Length: 323
Image (cartoon, rainbow, N blue to C red; front, side, top):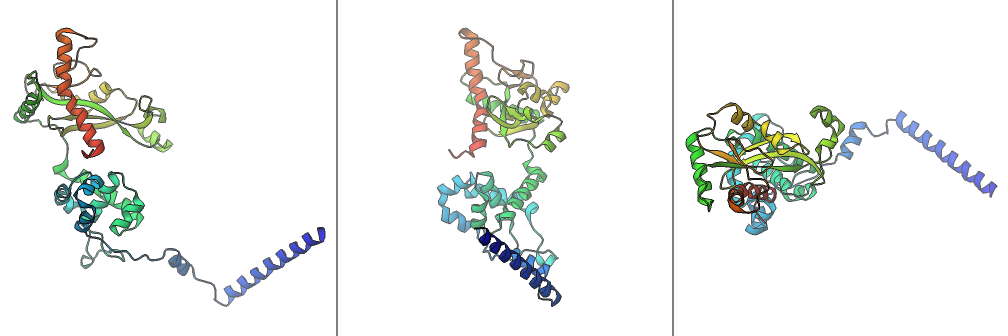
């Protein structure tokens, strides 16, 4: 066995020497592959066909389109009309580059991003839209930037007292007790995230444990939101990690500062409706604690009937209103 092992070792050494000599000769004779050629071969060109959005809608059908996009086709085109000026690419005739498969149009960018937001897998989205895996994520961030920079999509609580009174009328129409003073239902929601990186914790100046919500068993951010009777968001604030109390998140939000520092912000006699996590003040109506019967318990029931609209808004937000 020792002789066989020695022979195998000699063959291995001989092979190594021959390969080294051949590589040296190829380099001297200019037969070695250039680095650029290696790079081109590694990043080979994939021919893709861009699909039309209407063709995708037709293949899916109305029902599956709404499930895949969390909206119907009409809502998609309305959103595209709003974001199109911010999603338009630079055409080749204007000096822009454009990929080998052609420029990715704004409707494809928006479609890929919405499919991703709705829970689609990037590898499936790239096949449907005829774009690369990387361009799916590029589309997501382009749409995010477009939404942030679009003034018509900004969410801000109306300061006009007449608009606030219209909001109160909407809640009164849904209240069996005829509560007509509510100008917004407020509550908090945990926005799930991955466990934050140490670098992110350094930027936020809080540790990773602050992002972990023990009740939900998830890492996330505390979202405070106000909605009207139609479950439309009027104000949002995401400033704190998941373990932060709703009361602290509200008091440090923009609308919280306005309510505390500007007595004329809300129309006289109107207030927000919140749960027991908040404090009952002139601008916040909360339920009675510990009431199990009598007028206080009755008030809590009708108070909850108005406040439940924010819970419904969160449900529509998380599922897209499909299920």
